[in-house]
Amino acid sequence: MNCSNCGSQLDHPGQGHTCLGGVAPPPQPPAHWQVAQWALVTLAALFAGFSVVRAAITADLLTPPSGAVISALSIAGPLAFFAAFLTWSNVTKRVIDAHSIAAATVRHWAIGAGALLLLLSYLLPVKTPTAFHVVRAAAAILLGIGALITHSRATRRLADPATTADQNDATGTGIAPQRMDDARPGQAGSQPARLALDIETQPEDWNASLWDPEVQRDIERRRRQQAPPA
Image 1 (cartoon, rainbow, N blue to C red):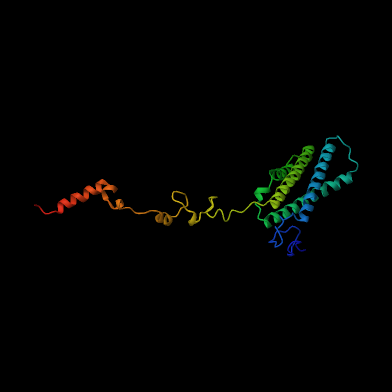
Image 2 (cartoon, rainbow, N blue to C red):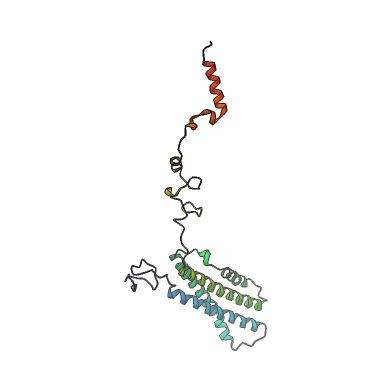
């Protein structure tokens, strides 16, 4: 695949590069990342809906159509959902690492909360099967919402990446270092050499009485002590 402006070789559509024929377009999310995203959201919704149905069945609100179907879905559903979440997490990590995006800036708290709820659901007592399925449904919803928000944040960062502060923050203060030519007296960052050139010495600078009267009196006292008696 080649760029339509400059003809450079590209690995994927929208890849950022130094384009000779115009401004380089912002990098676009990889297609497999989009597929992993929607697969996770779809399975999260199905898993949450299935957990709600299981909760209704255990609460005697619904009659199961077939025990074999429910048993098969009870095994396949969690495995498919876990595989989709693991795949999406790995792909997302590779994408944000490839574009130097900090994971903390795109991660959403709903992912951690959903994973914690899913783990805690297995610690519920055996006598509370309804609560077990309700908590699993809530965990799946939180994971799906968190994945959507995280994916959206990462996509926005790809379209409008934050400018790096390597050149403007060499000292870690967030203030761009000044050039010596731009330094002015009294301004932070001014150079002593430049200040020395701006100062002109005056004859009064060598008059000790103007510096410190104590120095002048000490000079006069020593002069009188060294003078021979008349």
